[in-house]
Length: 237
Image (tube, rainbow, N blue to C red; front, side, top):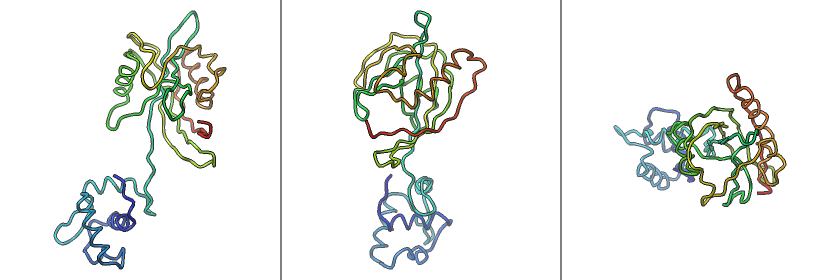
């Protein structure tokens, strides 16, 4: 739920630090009596606050809302959590990765690995299995976590416009008849050691991730996952 009204934010913020408040104590957020009463009722309609024994308190829904509120009343921007899935195969003595060319905006025409958002409340393993089956019609028989990447996206003015954590997953063993195209894009195999020669790829991610993937492929049993922070510019997308 998104709330932009300053009076409603002020009311919720005041209740954030107490168990409950009397009407007179809560009214201190504004001198405008009619305005306060209107927004107090709106918050009750939205189910964010409750009135109990002539006092006001946050509902369960309200407590969930303030989980994203900072002490200065600002609301945290949406944070993305996703998967970068390296679907792999050995072909003529070389390891290849299944690459995805986007056929939708944003980043139309750009090339990356198979990606997916992580659905709320759904385990990572379930997300991997579901996404691969729905998008390219394969079922993973084995997967390993290569690492995690915290990624900041910046615009032309160098302002952060996106933020997220992505789990990098290696999938060396899978079954099924692979589907090479859907409404979101097309897929193709490419030698791992030649990926950086391609144009219009998400270069920063590949430059940071491919060395770790190669270490994993050489010694998967002794591989140690990585943690990386990186910045990607969206000015060219």
